[in-house]
Image (cartoon, rainbow, N blue to C red; front, side):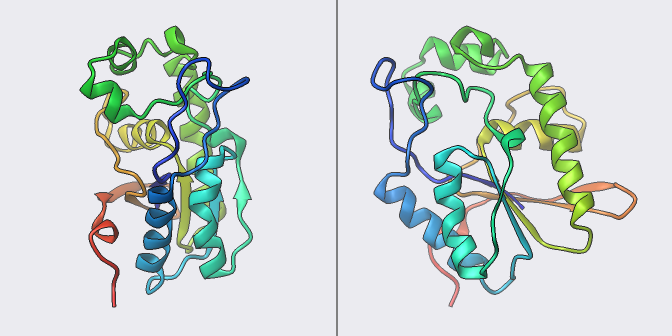
Length: 198
């Protein structure tokens, strides 16, 4: 399960020291709790999270509910993890910010991001390795929209970098066979944000 982090606090350019690493908003914390409650009937065997605070805080309710020690994996950081700001993608898109255009066009270096081919080369083998190391298990990988986009594009054979908009705490599921064949089974699940299973 590839899970995008919950809603984080906005950090504008120059508002913090060093790379922006926002915590979750109150709404984001609620999203993370709803996610854990939603997944409880299924069970989770292993939790992997990006080291960025928004991913770790999103993973925390899963870790608590399923009593799993989290694996923190620095390879799963977002392509713009070194940027001095965090502005939600939704805001960039709505305001037609130049960073939105650069993001979609793959000019990530212009706003402190990683070069796209290097990002793909970092992320795709790592997620494949996580799947291989946990054969027969249900693994929750809590990470970022760019990580999810680039991995699922590889699974589907899509050249576009950012081809869909994962919602906060959305779940996208990939089944991986023991021989490495990958199949996307669901994309961008958000039912837990409307209600919690009873």
